[in-house]
Image (cartoon, rainbow, N blue to C red; front, side):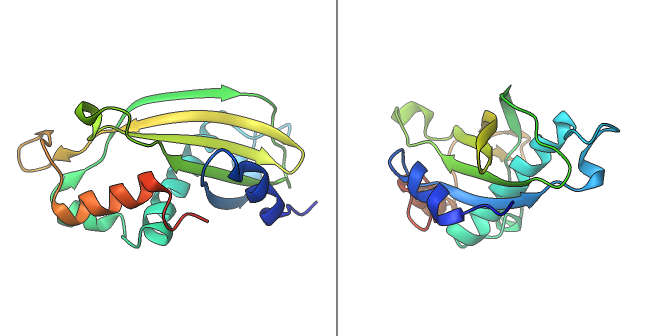
Length: 160
């Protein structure tokens, strides 16, 4: 069954802009019963986040590393709604939550939905914080070019 990407995006559009990352469930993603292994969803979410930086924000994730910034996951929450199966075509949808408090500007909270055309498989939230790789501590601020990228993503600019 093919997924109607524009219909899915339009349906979700009322809730804000989402970056869409299509995946197909292959044998290596499943257990012996053909059900997607739980850890696969996390790998798909990370791939979608990295592609969102590249495609929607115009910055390769390696630019953070070159700027001396790492973005480790500090919090991860998943809710499994319905299993995906071998051969399913899914859409990993992600967006960076808007800033709610100035004091949390360095906390990057990503929302996710992994959907089959007919149902929700997984909803999740992942929080990243920038770490200054030279000091090994949480960065007090991002380099200006990285701040701009984060601001564009938070506003939904460039998201499909």
